[in-house]
Length: 164
Figure (cartoon, rainbow, N blue to C red):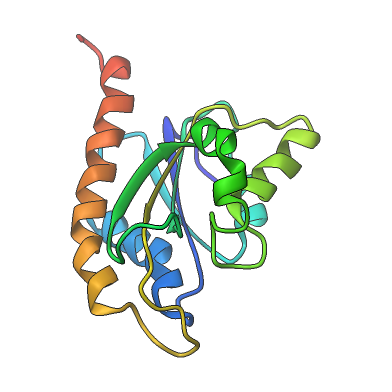
């Protein structure tokens, strides 16, 4: 994988309704003209595989379906350390797939590869049934989520720009 100043991974199963929002948003971002230094990856269900190829010292943005109790289509942004503080609330709800991001990051930390700058962006899912694409509610949130992520990328990369 290439050197980056910020890595973005879309996580989820596109065959399980709104759980596929991470890869869908990653695809939208990949088609945009992102600032130099931003690398986008569709991790699908292979979170650990993708994390293993990334530099843990580089800021990481994770895009996923998040069950946090809001209205379907609600867009969330939180630092991973904030999610860890309320783990009792989000435990098992951080992701709809078998190996969620939080355990994958913990496994990486156990091997000495701790990702310290992780921001999670997500959408509250409406439906996660086998064979369905994104619900209209989640689909309506895709561009809003992509815009928020681009804004965050620009914030991360701004201090790295020459002449700033």
